Length: 196
Image (cartoon, rainbow, N blue to C red; front, side, top):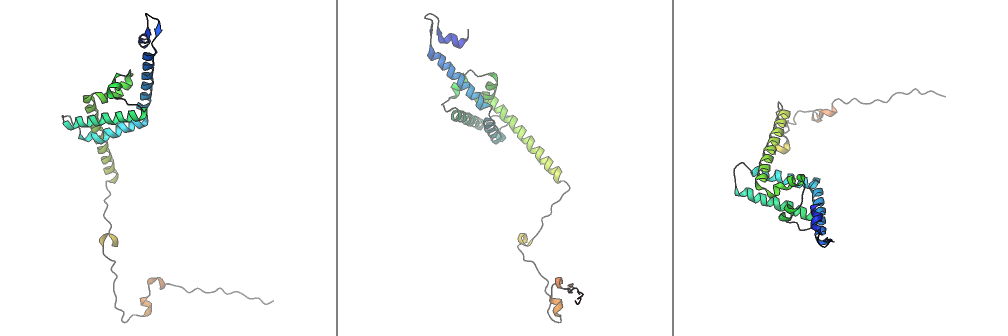
C-alpha cells in the first residue's frame, strides 16, 4: 500500500483521515507547480543571469563574500518561487517536499554551499573562455586592417582653409568656379518649315 495512503487511513477504525491526505495532495500540487517553474525559460534566465553576474568574484579559495553571494542567491530563488507559486515557501519547506531526482539536482545549489561555489567557479571558467573566444575571433576578423582615424573639420576643431588668391589682374572668368568653364551653349534645333 502507498505510504501516503497508509498514513491517511486509520487501520483500527477503518476511517480515512482526510486532513493528512489533503496535506499530501497539496504537497503534490506544489511539487507539480515547482517542477513547471524550474523547467521554464524565465527560471533558467534568472538563474543564469545571477550566476554570470556574480561568478567573476569566485576562485578556488575561500572568502566571506562567497557566503554572502550564496545567501543572495537563496533569497533570489526563494523570492522568485514565492511570487510564481503565490505562497510563502521557506527553504526548509522546499527541502522537505518529495521532489524527484531532477528537481533535487536543480535545487541542490540552494541548500549546498560547496555545490553552489563549484557551480560559480565553473561558470567563471566558462564565461572567461567565451570572452577569450570572442576576443580571438574579433582579432582574426580585424587582422590586417588598420584603421586610421579620419580627420574631419568636426574632429579637429579647425575650419577648412581655402587658398586665398589675390584678385588683381584676374579676369572675371578666373573668378568663376570650375563648374562654369566647360559649359557648351545649347542650340535650338532647326526645323524645316514647309509652306502649305
